Each structure stands twice: as structure tokens, then as C-alpha cells.
Length: 113
Length: 112
Image 1 (cartoon, rainbow over the protein chains, first blue to last red):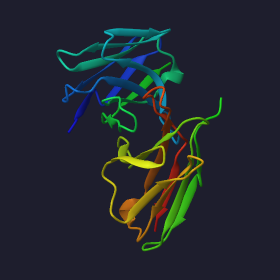
Image 2 (image 1 turned 120 degrees about the vertical axis):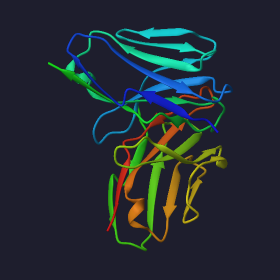
Image 3 (image 1 turned 120 degrees about the horizontal axis):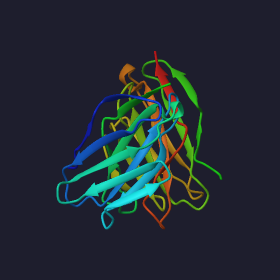
Image 4 (image 1 turned 180 degrees about the vertical axis):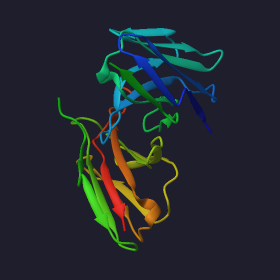
């Protein structure tokens, strides 16, 4: 089955700096890769996603890149703000109806003012 | 915009008791997923339903069962609760127009 690894497990950056979180997956059949942000006591919130037919996607300060050959994808957050502090999860799925996500173990991002 | 609704938000049970968690998907979403998240861990997939039929099954214990009803809401039934069942339980929903899953706020279950 699919296995998703995520690095680093914790990341501290100064406000205004960039943050990069990397994930690798094992199943070449996976073709949908979402990123979720989870704040304490809340459900995961989708922040950006990418499909296998696209190499990069950007939404304001957030971007995701995908390298299908190497089976890795990354989340880039620029101009970080204290409210970006949270746990970030990457996930992979085959994108079929009802197909579950396999999540990475998460990255705890702390943005220091 | 309407989000996924879960109830109850918090639940305390004794060992060997039963619990029922409810999930109301986003309107017009026909697929529901259940996940279990332990402290400091990533969400683990339990089970999913598409159009009221089970569509995928993960690491759901035999003591747990779930179903999706005609109005697309879903219930997760948990019996013979164990201390290790203490966790956050999330429901997510998606529509047939896309594979994006939207998560609810979760139910925090504590088994004493």
C-alpha cells in the first residue's frame, strides 16, 4: 500500500521567512496530493492541492511542487506570519471516489515573531 | 459556506461501553470518510462510503461499524470501547465532481 514520508517533523522560522516541507510517496499510481493545515483542537483544513498532470501550483503565499518521477512533492510558504503556525499534513491518494488519503506524519511549523 | 458537521464534539465513555458518532456532510456531497487521529499522530483512515455503499476500508476494528443513510449522513458505531480508542475522530466529505476531502471539526472521544 501507499506510504507517505514527511520532513521535517518540526520547523521553526522567523516571521517573514520562507518555510518548505517535503513529502515522498511510494505508490506511483497516486495522482492527487493535498496539503492540510491543522490547528490545535480543530479539523484539518485544505490549503492547497495538486494533481499529477501539473508540476506546480500557487495560491498567494502558498505553492506546491510535484515531481512524479522522483515521487516527491513540497509545500512552500513565503512571507510566513505567526498565524501560519500549525501542524501541516501532506497526503496522497489515487483520486478515485471514496478513495482514502494516506497522510504523512505531519510537520509542526512555528513562526516566531 | 456550509461545512461538515459532527456530533457530539466531545464524548466521555467508560470501558466496554458503546458510542455513536454522527457526521453530516457538506450539502450535495455523497461520499463520507472516517478517520481516527491519536495524540500527535496523523489521521488514520477507517472507512468510507459512496452513495450509501461502503467504498473503502482501512484499519477499522471489528468492534466498530458504520453506515451511510439515505440523506447521506453517516454514523460510526463503536462497541466494547477500550482505553486505546481515546482519540479524535474526524469525518470528511467529498462530491463526485472531485476528490477533495473536506474535514469536520472532529469528535474527541475519551474512554475511561
